Image 1 (tube, rainbow, N blue to C red):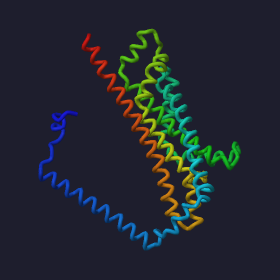
Image 2: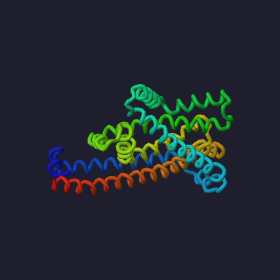
Image 3: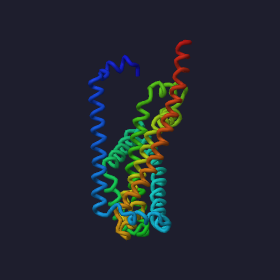
Image 4: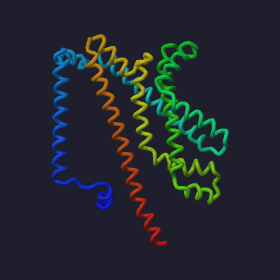
Length: 287
């Protein structure tokens, strides 16, 4: 954005405004530091900062028997849900783009329904249904309920991403496909959807982060994931707060890694667009 367009959007702050902004920033930092110090003092008064409460997480048995198995279950549920969400989203995303009104209507109802239902509610319903129906072993019902619940909700979001991504493409893409003899369906599969998937790849990776975080909701239905096992450690050692902090740090590290991956993918896609743009301008100049 050029300096001219920036000046149209807002005026550059003057010396007094810059001074006020600096003062407010300093006050904000001081308030944040004061709040942190107050919380630490309050926790220390309740003996929550006692090193003994934290040293338990340096023991290998705690990680090998509780936290690592919980983390593996979390990653397993998230990985399966990511794959099944992509399949679900692609099928019903294509259904929402279909010219057949019946297929379009059915796909739209399914996608909008599962987007509207809370993930936790779906997990609870599936857990109770699977447990009472006897279709799966009782020990497996929490895991299956978590995977299906994540698949239905996030798959519906992926389907909407595909639909909006295709509709956001220039109409010339479809017209070019039809001009070379492709049918509407072939144009979707071979030209439009691949471009839409490339454009929305950062959004897809962000949705994968949502799947990873929402897997912790399985704690409510006794799924032995990271949060559930962390709570077991906290209950057994009377350090629930410390256990939750450790679990939160693990989730933060995982989500930070996925966020960085999304940034890398987005920057690479942007660089490709930046490379392609001059070529397009050169062609137009030659014409």
